[in-house]
Image 1: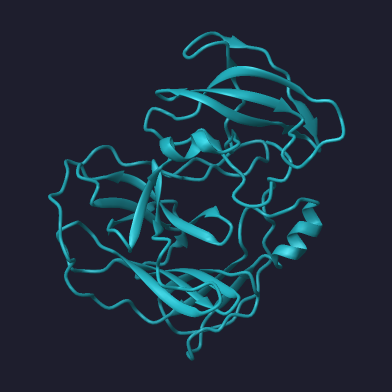
Image 2: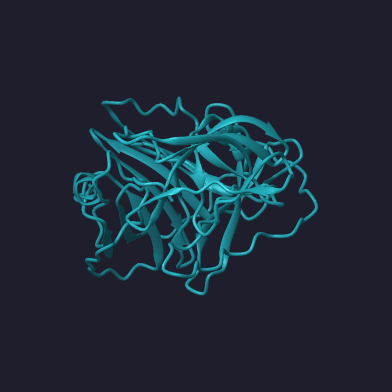
Length: 315
């Protein structure tokens, strides 16, 4: 894994509340303006500046997290429109823990659902927007809510759910989080998202309606060809001379026990991608000589999930 992409080491502070609904919050500040109710708060991380100083990197890949308990989620109004339910394809299994001290794989699905960029929350102002997560495309019931809040210079992404699960929000960019998408209906109007995971490892699913001005769905097959990449957690770097061709050797430089490289996409053929591999990575600037070569990699697996990832902030 290239430098500037290291796992966070969480620290925990705990308080108390009698509520049973779990809320996950991501914020740049440790002190958040929570609702005026007693909440249990678990603070993970010590702030972006501290992480940058600790890692020696221009930016951290994950915003700091806070877990809190709040009020139960009531039912909402019926969806504005519903699409017929597609036949059930195989459901993604929770990723297995990585071995050898590597960080566990993250379930990123086939894409991500994001709040629409024009969500009415100004850069300097305050506001809140919510996506309802439903049990199916025909239901008016609410399984969970995905909430984006901004207050001045602080921001939060919150998942409120009935079940006691850990959050599955995914950082897509600096101050931009979304929910991993397992699959979409044929007309693309609904997506089945992964919004949490139980203590036993079972992924939690629900449906979100995609609509202009509210929610957008981006497939990894469209996103990844435009980003500098590296192999995802638990994936061994493998290079090929051609798409579906034989493996070729391309030794990667190591730094602090991790591979130091970056891959620039050149072209795509199905789940295969031609990349310009540079080692050591030059995205953060490098003073030593680099080696580079045009090679092929398999960037999606058989379920169209990414085998590669990108720096969501910094370099």
